[in-house]
Image (tube, rainbow, N blue to C red):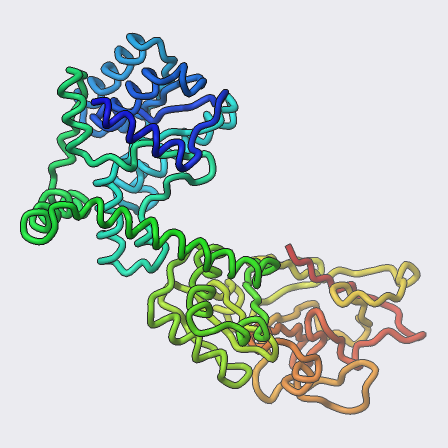
Length: 458
């Protein structure tokens, strides 16, 4: 027992997990791992000079057993004189609503509630009871699913305020310790359902590996995962240094090409994957990375769809990545709008209303324009996307110009150019919305009636 305790104490010291004066909130399920962690921290509370609290989440999944788990945690904390925060959440209902697995739903809710307590009561750290076996299962599961370097780096020893003091211990060592100390704990029967991915690895795959290949596989994978995590940290720091100012603006991630072209192939692969995961919470597949790297050398205007529901565009000086969804407007051919109305779409509003001629003050705003209403046919306008062959008479210029040529001269990015909207009255283009009026509708000294056109972007 002493050897096990010394191993944990050394692990805590080597990784600077606990400081004197810390207020530690222990995530307590009632299972063997969290019970061991609570007993251990209580035994060494004075030496570590910390305050201890516990948290239990009742998942409402196993009927009476779930209530018995909660009661057990209350009794244990009472016997150890440790304050307990207990919360009940319908995990199954949450999983259905979010369309995720029950296991993932439980994890999300658990960390959400822990974070709330962390802010409310100002804890310094949340201690979870992940062990060495958990790390093995995580690495293998991520390796099989192809999640990349971050996935096979395993469970981090420390992440923000979350610490894992017993990550170094194998499950059998924990169980042996509890047996010798005669410490009771609860068993979750769902841990033996092998139709769950993690349980299949735990009860079928790993026993075969231990018996046929390597009995010390957990220790081997733990050491490897720590090396992978060091490599991941190095690459992450390198990426952050190069792309420290890169983030989503509006709905798009704009990555300067000159930064990408300076990277070697390995760091380019890592950086593209990291930037997408960080900004869109989407994981790129290997084929997506290949496609993105190929797009960098393609001509301006090329685009590709990624399997993660994203679209990437090659522009003159940037690689642009955004969510692959069109606005509600683009799904329709013509949107009718009358004088006195406004039409609201995904992130913008267009309105048309009469204005007082005397109140007009000329400005350079391209989102607010005034036109003569003297030559307007009726009171109806139409908003639509531009199409090939569209021409107008740009105000301040002589003669007709193709909309396509006009947009090219403005050097509008190709993906934005395709979404450009026009305001028409009858068959005449009145406004290339947000850019230029048609000369036929300009205000003159003889203008009697004026309309205000307004584009509001949210």
